[in-house]
Structures are given as structure tokens and as C-alpha cells.
Image (cartoon, helix red, strand yellow):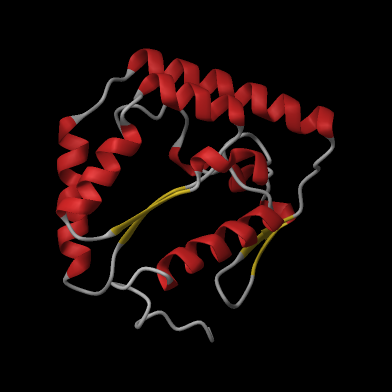
Length: 167
């Protein structure tokens, strides 16, 4: 990240720009109040799309990053159950991501098969989710995605017996 992130690190998150409009709740949920006016959202999506296009022109697939993901999975499995989740984005970013690495889902599915973990892919259902900028989910969509992920875990025999739904 140090190598490719061009802005000051204190500006790492879109939430930094929204510091007066966010609330961290006791359960760890960050609630953000942000305009969802179509014109404003479209502008944010356009900015995010340009940012992604620039990144994809400058970067290529990294075997090193994939190896570190494998090591992270191995480490996390020592402490509990692990799942890979591909979150949804806007249609535009999904198309960009697909051009950047057309075999991403195959790679993640293969990795999850190798490590005997579940891979939950929400990316192809982008029309079911609303984003604030093409990348970050709007709060209602975040809740919906969380429910879909939980359902995916509960229906997988490796996870179904260990997920506490009362939290």
C-alpha cells in the first residue's frame, strides 16, 4: 500500500472525509449519513471509476499478494473458521474488475478449494445492492450483504454448526 497509495495516510478512508457524518456504534457498525442524491452518487461513482481505471493501468496481477493471502488464510485457520467473500460493487466497477482480472473468481474458488474454505461471491449480483460511490455499500445494502453472507455460512456444512446467530 505504501508503494501505490498517493495520498497522505490519514486520508486512507472515504470515512475520513465524512468524520462529522459518521457514528461508530457499540457493536462496531460504522453508520454513515451521506447524500444518496442520484447526481451526487453518480459523481462519486465516476470519480471511483477513474481511480480504478488508473490503478488497473498501472498494476498487474501479483503472485506475491496471492501468496500472502494464502499465508493469511493459513494463519487465520489456526484461530477459527475462515471464508473468502467478494463484495458487490457497481456494475461499472464490476466490469472494470472483470477486465483487469477475468479469472479472479476462478482463482479465489481454487484457493478456497485448496484450503477447504467457502468462497462467497456477491459481485455478480451488483444490481441488488446500492453503493455510495460504486465501491462502498450503502447501509441498507451492507445489512443485506451481511445477511447473504451469514446465510451462505449457515448452509455450508463446514460453518453451519459454529455460527452464532444471536450476536
